[in-house]
Amino acid sequence: MTNHTSATVVAFRQSALLLPAASLIGTLLLLGFASPVKATQPPFADWLNYKADKVLTVEEATQIVELSLLLVNKDKPVEQRRNAAESIGLKMPHRAAVPALIQVIADNKDELRVRSGAITALSQVNDKSVIPLLISAFRYPDLRSRACEQLRKLYGYNNVPPFGLTPQSSEKEGEQVIKVWEDWWKMNEATSKPHRAMLLFE
Image (tube, helix red, strand yellow):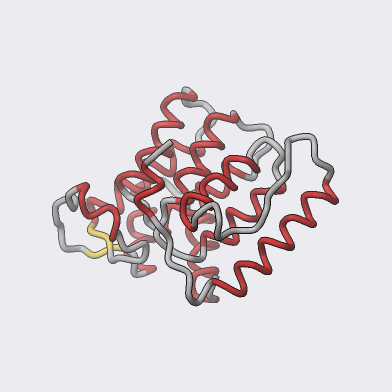
């Protein structure tokens, strides 16, 4: 993840937790994620080529803000939050939504269905910076298989390292597998091309 991306992610996370939705839209404008020019939602067929760093319209920024706030709100029904994650992944897989996805994934006390949906949505963000985040999710016993499955879909079962972890695997075993995958990604990041269409199949 670049310094610019890291700074942006931190800024968005802070905004999502501290500011009302109206202020969040202004934050996205200031960060360069949003444009004051209003445009229609791109057709679903463009999902495969969706740019995770595209300049958002105010309408699009508003949708991402609303979905992100719904996703992290534990007072909302689980199904609504799960649907918010799905909407991010299938309709607006922009990197501006990544902090909210990470927040949910990292919360061991949150509902598994919501966290699993966040893993899926994270994998659908068309930005290579999310790959190390998915690998890091191997640290969560209840999510590691889902994260691995999404990575296998992106890069092919025969092109990624062995996995072999279960929810019962020890922390040491998990860290060993993470190290193997991190080394694999360092070697292949520059040349690898994800097969995004495979993410649409369960």
